[in-house]
Image (tube, rainbow, N blue to C red; front, side):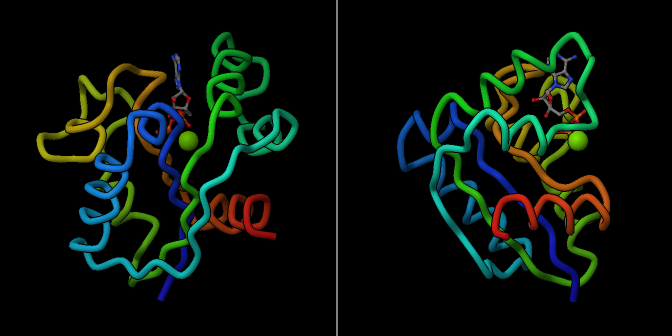
Length: 134
Ligand code: ADP
Ligand code: MG
């Protein structure tokens, strides 16, 4: 079993409970077990640490303001090959390029507002789970 970090981003949480429920159901149907779940607003410093790899890029400030701008749903997930399987389920970063039926294809609005986050590799998963869940 492997763990990964999944996050439903603020624009989806702000849109109401139905989309959050639909997305969690997609994750559940894909064979993931939820082992921790919390709705909470992350402070700016936490988000800057979380997205540290992007510091210095043109979109970094907007990204951090957006993620810190409202509550997210933070989720720890478990299944075999969880990191790769979750990235497959969510689709490409840009919703316009995400495979049909992926979470970002169905719920993403733009390159920035792309509905969800999933850890990119097992090292990131451990780091991100540490930041969010301690
Ligand atoms: P992913 O979330 O697929 O791992 P990245 O790590 O490259 O993608 O980027 C982190 C997040 O930053 C993306 O999910 C998206 O919200 C935002 N982002 C990435 N690239 C851009 C960009 N060129 N312009 C605006 N926002 C971006
Ligand atoms: Mg990433």
